[in-house]
Length: 81
Ligand SMILES: [Zn+2]
Image (tube, rainbow, N blue to C red; front, side, top):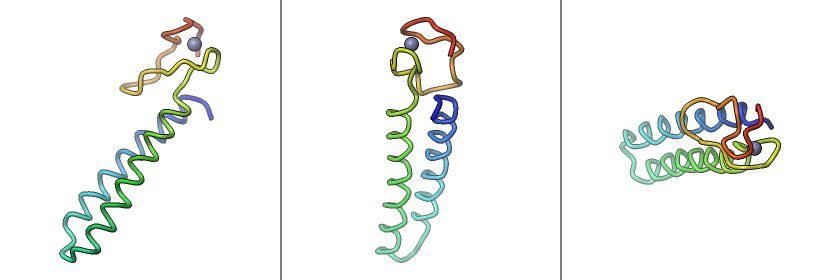
């Protein structure tokens, strides 16, 4: 997986995870609320795991900045990515 695709998945997981957690908070049933919020949290965590594993330079494996857009050059080795 390249770092651009990983970044998209990361943002998507954060977005979907947030929506699921907000929807979960609106559910009147307490047990169901905990389950839905747990699922939202899991999606959120998956996003962070994907970011941690795959938002990296393909040359030096250095971690790239997770925020904002994909950089054109690696901040560690300076290669075009
Ligand atoms: Zn690099």
